[in-house]
Length: 401
Image (cartoon, rainbow, N blue to C red):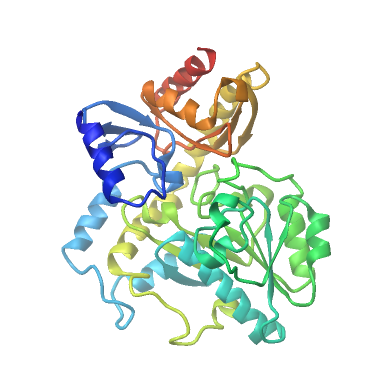
């Protein structure tokens, strides 16, 4: 067997089959390019679902990690360390907020946001104990814990994991009327993705996020924006909410915050909201560790320049112009997205999203499918225009074959 076949066979034999990766085995990567165990190079147009916004092996991030590895990597939160205060301060400033509660993975941050909203509802809003409700949107993807999949509408994510956690109301994404009708005195939060990534990069109507902000403010309900995929430069702004001039009560961040080097996530909000926690009521051994803070501080410094947001906006305009030329031509039914992020609905007659992804892989371009015949494009923000165009040429070739 080839090195690729050997590695995949071993993985299949000794790991749970909870993923169905494309049959490529990556050995190294730099910028927007990955090299497999056979020495073949592939253009990465997925960027780890936005975890790699700054590219593979970004020198600034690697240097920050190496420097911290030589000093201290973990103290637990039993003790202070010298990177923590700066990380919290700089991230709060980037978000225009006051407080940060650091965790590790995106799902942990979403769980933290849920706990924060419920505690705020009981301690501040005065909701009767055990009655707090959180409104979410259909077709959401916020993670895979038992609580989070309890409010998923995706059968693959939800089936066979009951009994499910109560306390969530699901309404159609983008529907302000349904949201308004679902609100009660016991509603403590609305948790939504400003752009739904796993659903196929769905951008809501222009009045949706402002409407959510207005409704939640009127009803004394927290507006929680899950910007784990959409945030930190991906859409051409630091946060996707900025496109509509909206500031939520709480940001949920992850993925790109760790630069593709270490898992870093956080809930960022006001002192009034995150101030509901007292010592011992919530935490994480690795959350806010020195290594994570060192890398995330470099990410924040890079974002503060604005160059990555500007690059995502400019290259994103080019990406969507080129993809728009494909829409309506028979091969592509629809294109959605913002910045360097796109969902492309392929005509089912051409194949499933998985089949199109495999054909692109044969052309040395890596994307990923979702929901039938949809593929997603989300290259590292450091990709060159020439490389992006090369990848788009490969896409055109696959769609016209």
